[in-house]
Length: 231
Image 1 (tube, rainbow, N blue to C red):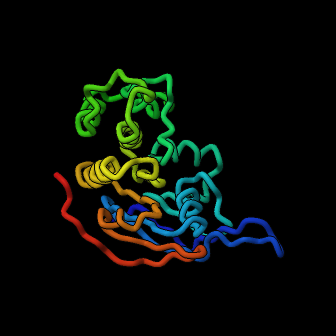
Image 2: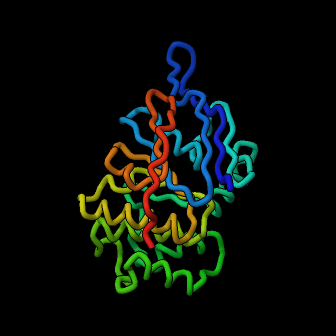
Image 3: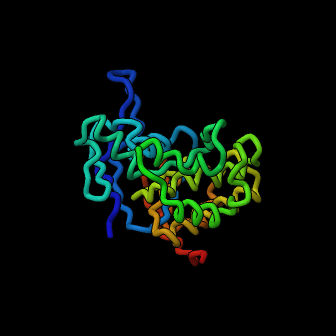
């Protein structure tokens, strides 16, 4: 089942002689439960791509269809609500709320949307991510790897159509990086989550089902790397 379809996506900053083409005719699609990685050097356009798909930036032209909904045809408020309910984000800098504990940070997207948290779902996510015993800890009392686990839990709790991961291991050591990647693979398999991750670390592509490369705003499909899903 096709979840995401990007067609002829272009993004240009500035105009005239100062115009910079960040994305040029980017087209690809993703299926439900697929885990894809986008690799590229700094400034290649991969972050711009992620921000456009996530509705955080507006492309110059093209289309982005998520679960049969065209993001670019929506008004700003409609797109904000759609993004909150259908797209989960995992950032390099974690972006947890320091005054909220682990459990509260995970539930925060639901509370922001005035939705009652499903206690069973919250418990299951904390157990899956190994956070149950730290439910009352504040972010400042956690390691970097544990904070990123909370960020993954926060992305999962709304049961989004798509999870966008922006350099999710960028601030972690090698052991924590592997743990986080294994959790993302597990989420893709256990919860049938569609995940699109950008990274400059090509070693992380071994965890992905499919790999894209972005160079000077042009995207190339490097093909599939099917790995056994973690149970």
